[in-house]
Length: 98
Image 1 (cartoon, rainbow, N blue to C red):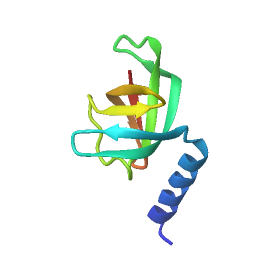
Image 2 (tube, rainbow, N blue to C red):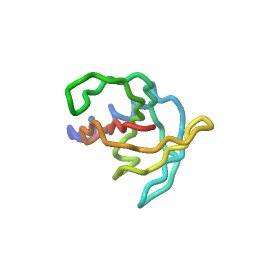
Image 3 (cartoon, one colour):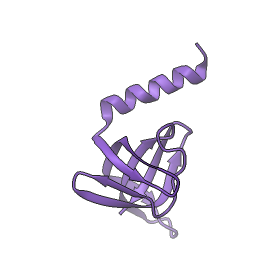
């Protein structure tokens, strides 16, 4: 088994254990239900290097090939709007949402 296959399996296992729920992800090129991890207390630095707390949603890259500002994620009776991609390691993408 290749390293890439093992990494995919590991990512799926992590999401399976940590996911909060399935969410409806609607972007410019797709709409589907995907497993997500919601984090309401993630620390980022603003332009002046001042720490601030933001809400993020993490998705698997294999489920959501591209993400852009303005995409929407409906989770638990609320619709979140993607503001920015904060992290993307090729397996899991962390999105700043509001």
